[in-house]
Length: 277
Image 1 (cartoon, rainbow, N blue to C red):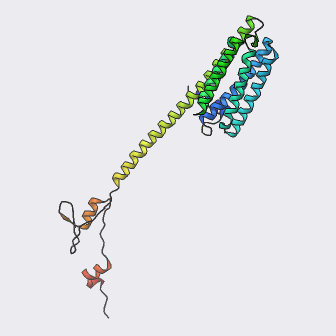
Image 2 (cartoon, one colour; image 1 turned 90 degrees about the vertical axis):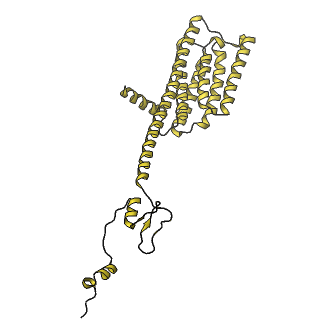
Image 3 (cartoon, rainbow, N blue to C red; image 1 turned 45 degrees about the horizontal axis):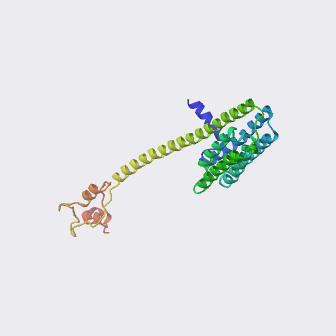
């Protein structure tokens, strides 16, 4: 299982941008632009095979160039935010135009609106998401009303089989696009969760190491009562201790004894005293 996952991540990194250098939103935008261009390419081939009117092919060609342009720009610059509104505005116009050219509510355009709606929900932030979603709903309502009151504005298919193939192929394509977007978002979400879990576990380890280090550090603070004569130190219980024993009990130190030059002369003058000629 590890090998396919690694291959999948490497493939997605080449197509959508490296996860460490590209944000999730930027990768989703790249996926939307790329899939839009591929959808235009598939629909172009579909239109040519089904011998649909030229307007169908023209809309597909525009979708190919728009998707390829925004995909390339976003992938290279890693700056998707200035591109969100232009690309969605263009595709709203293209889809609205294709509504009249592909049978209206009985054609495949409804599925494409659904994909665009999902993509906009992911990419747009407040308050732009409210404006985008509201505009999309308004356009769909206007298209439905126009189709109802002026059905002659809708270009019919030549026969039922032509409509069946067009709707069927578009439905399968849109389901594939939706699945790809969901897979991208869920996999990136899982990657972020795994990374956060690793950071959390590392934080716990660092905390334990810090607490252990703090326990090992013992520092003397405050006023220490010391005898003015013998230099013994009084503890909190009122007992008097030698300086070295008190400090050894309250700090991570150990004493080793020696003798200073002054004490040498005082204690052993016959050995360390100045020799008289």
